Image (cartoon, rainbow, N blue to C red):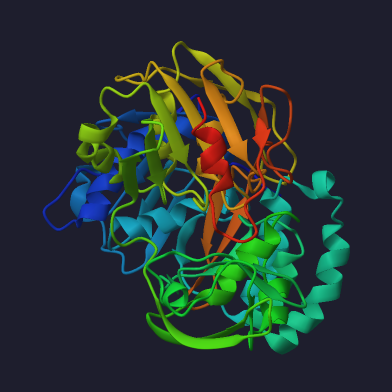
Length: 486
């Protein structure tokens, strides 16, 4: 029987690690983020642990305690044995939980297992790669325990598992990817732990064709003459389509991205023009997280155009770097097309600069252990330290997703805000991340989000205020042109 480890406690005292010379820059940022991360996840953590959490400098023996490693950076873990992988040590008698690892990345891997604590006995639980049998069991059990959308999407998970388990036992990872893709949720997926590079094109894939939708001017495809509306040739369309879970309007574009991902290096490609001409070229996959995440310039009308590619912590400093363009402008166009999310706190800090008072953003319901939806929680936003006083227009498309949708949540409907383009992807997330087969993770969405109009983001996305279809020829940016008419 499932029992939260601290269900008899009034609160759980949390002792965090501190920065340490042995940490890299990513781990130092994680340390900075941890208090806010725990605060944002307070209600969910209370459900997992059995009591609310409170961050303290020290937690006396006998009180309910959660000590977070790595041990070398947390004085409360001095003298504890070093951990070579992420571990959870649970001792209900001592009212103690220790999450540890050789570095903070490994510690973060343990957080995805907090939901399973109620099913765990006391002792040391190692977060390691699974074998195929463990992967099948984990997919079946953890999706049932966490995914919020069975009713929303009409999914019979037991029947789905009964169909896919025998095939997964025979075929392994390819069948597991197809199995989870049936959920139609881009947040719930099996992902590579090795960072993938991407061919810099946007392509819409179906089971019969791959149609080019956007060709960056700096790409080899553009130099070869490829333009929107051309068809890619020789691609494995079936695999891309069948292994990509997403909302119906996002799936073609996300399948196109997945199809063109891979290791760094060159990728031969071929395409056919509408008039039948064929062109072959070699494209170089690029790291989507390399280079500036923020681009800024003035538009034809004199407004400021800001494009944010992905929400990484460095976006905040990059926005400061372009203040010579943004300062003094009272008309902003923020381009979030193609921005699939990223660092939630960076994204919502950006959102807050457009709030002018404490604002109800929407509501959220998170699953409880066992899979049932918990109570509704109101989401509130506060104005940022440097509020923007002018008008802002956001450009969105089906690849605007996850924390980019959190940026829009609560802004849409304010008198100085307008959203243009096509519906967003449909999934604000709150994702569990579980170590899975070698070099893979299993991610599972745990929440449903509604905007102030009571429209559920999951499954359908945010509808733009002004629907603007892209120019099929790629000769003009229809959404930007419309947004730049003031």
